Length: 203
Image 1: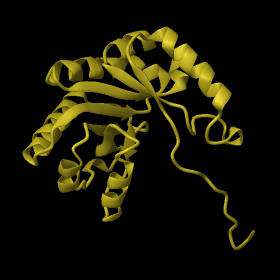
Image 2: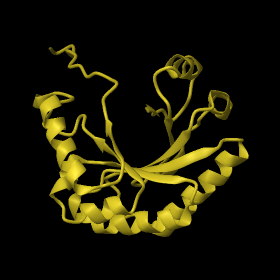
Image 3: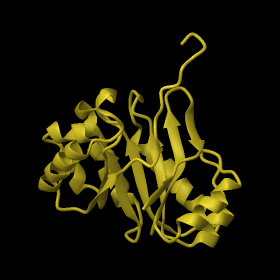
Image 4: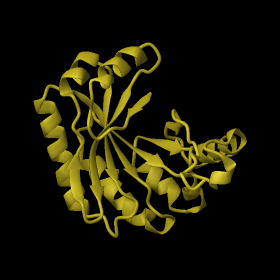
């Protein structure tokens, strides 16, 4: 499965979608974001390209981890309106995914949001979340994962930068630990990008 993570689409997306068809079955598309102070903003997706592509479509809602609190009713209203708007553009959603890098202490609050959201979504529409390995330390994790249909364990750029973008052996340990916590399906969020340290004019 493939993430399309741009707030504004360009003509290059047409090529990217076409060239990815043989390798990726499902599209997770950034759809909506909420940031401190800035509030809510929609990603400007190209609905025509998504309709033509035809692969199962998951709308991703990003709730910034720096938000002081998450208003469950506001999130519900925003997600419901997003679904209505995308369906009005001829897009058939297979699911909604919440991307929220909540701190471990806030997982009980997050679970309540996910429980309400699952009840509010159509039964035919899945609810998934991205998740962090740090959550493995929380006794709240099994209940949180039970509230959703699946999770995507983020295993890139989550450790000390000196360890690199992605560490294979550490990922294996996290994956084994995650499988002991939940019986629900889960995926690994793998990096499809690189990082570089570039010299400035000062060296």
